[in-house]
Length: 226
Image 1 (tube, rainbow, N blue to C red):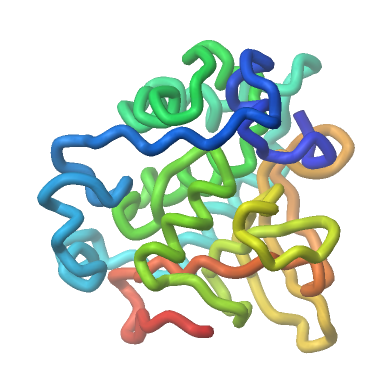
Image 2: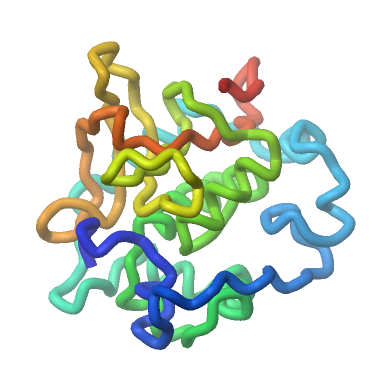
């Protein structure tokens, strides 16, 4: 399911919900800093980062780049990123929030599953966030004070193809590789291109709704830009 279909809740539900369905309140969870629920949510992002592997933005981009070329099947899915997400407790949490079926994730839009997979593989899920719905992932960064307008390597970039800066209008997500300095950015994205694949892309910054800034434990400075 390539990027023209966008990473929206209707796709995540595997067709079980219409795109007009209102957002449900996230379910409460016992102790989950990734969702911002439970006792762990009381910890600051820097406290959480201090307990994680010393992963840097460079490490994240190296792993993301190594996945370039992986593509979906003829049904718009079947990638290891979708299969991984289906296996996680987080998938059941987002189902409780969004509705649909667990099986629906297998052929759902997977741009955010790719971003979440990269964070989880490197052991930094609590500062990367994990979701299959781009709007909620963008909101997670904003709720944690990690949202801004400045592109920088390793930032999670959220797009709206019409140029909206409203988080509710986010349609797609990827990683920033670099700011080209000419009104474009270089990115690595999942679920993009005509065949639905992991690809390196060049995007105009006017299509960027905003940037989420993971607090990378291996970087000397992890302050959010704005």
